[in-house]
Image (cartoon, rainbow over all chains, first blue to last red; front, side):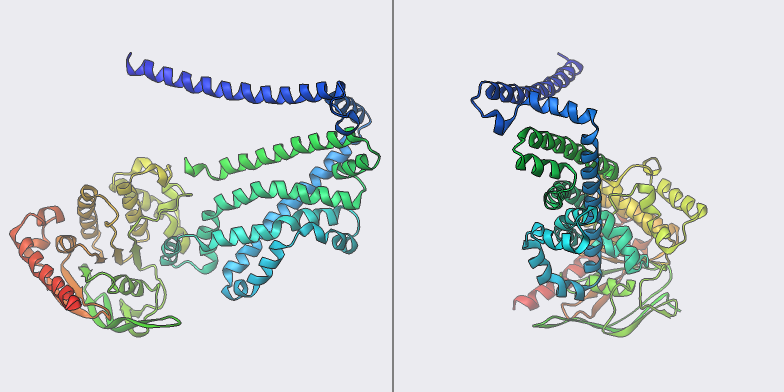
Length: 265
Length: 259
């Protein structure tokens, strides 16, 4: 066999492996739904508690036809995206301030540790009292939950940028401001992107808990309402929609990552 | 008038528990077009001296004048090259070599053209749109050289720029840097721990003592060697004699420390 054939065989092998992975993934998904349907229809699992795929599907069709599902989904999605962007942007801005002033970072250090260890959702009632039971307090919750951890992670990344890159730009007479924007910030894009990925999940937690508390509309409201009237089909439907939307958001962040970090080759 | 005048500079580092005198009473004048090497025992403050000349670090006392003007902060007139290339991985080669121009606000069609011309001279013209991760170590260091030259500094400060390269690449790059510097009539100060590199490339070799560093001795490289390319210079008898002299002198520091 010559090298060309060997290479072809190698590529074929790679393809086969990829196909096998995909088929297995799909099988797990199908198996999950089929056994869910089967177990609840045979009453091995209580359908009142676990619902079933067919009931969820029917409910979805009803909710699509009366349009209410779009209202709840879009409200939640809007709050999550905004909370996520605000949390990441404010966290990065705070990290920049800490990097700028050694004094500030030394002063803030114990407060950040306390705030970071504190469960942010516990502040929910205060937010609702302060900002009113509506969008703003839910968005604030989505942002609050990720802002401190973003600050800490990004600030650490800022500090750990190789001093020599700064030396290069300073030898060209750059000011501190210029060094920040042309070295520190771009050097930390990989870290910022990975905090974005973590924040996607955190923002969903914040927003759903916020909607539990405010209980007006949104997928979190659907979950808490379904729970209260013991309609677990509604709970399951909301969970599945959240799973789909959160995955889409994560994929968007990955797309951004590929765009921004294409220099890594 | 000399291009660079170093007058009685001293540098002391402070920490909570100690005071370290790094550099003490160094006086040196560097003429236009001269190539100076600074060698000395490891940890003696060679890089500190270079950082002070560049303006990145302030001396505790004493003055450094470039073209009669005192240096207090980094100026466009000096270029600095580090041990590793430190190209910005997120910028293409073209953006990397124009980084200095952009930072100084001097980026125009003309200056960018000049930078690309220099890149061509280094034989890297075709790589202008790739990212640094796609180049080898030697190529990257050449790009770093272009980045430094693009701003047309008068004085080049080279901080062991070849130390991270393999031997063959290092020899080739020494020749390239040497000829480029001579061609563009630049003045250069090279910090190195490699005696043969110092002899092969420079006109004068300044040997620093152990900490607190002062100038221990200045060696003049014979004219016969200066005219040669570094690679050729390494093959002459004169080269070996000078190497022996410097080696023995450096060794004497070691003995003083152990005895």
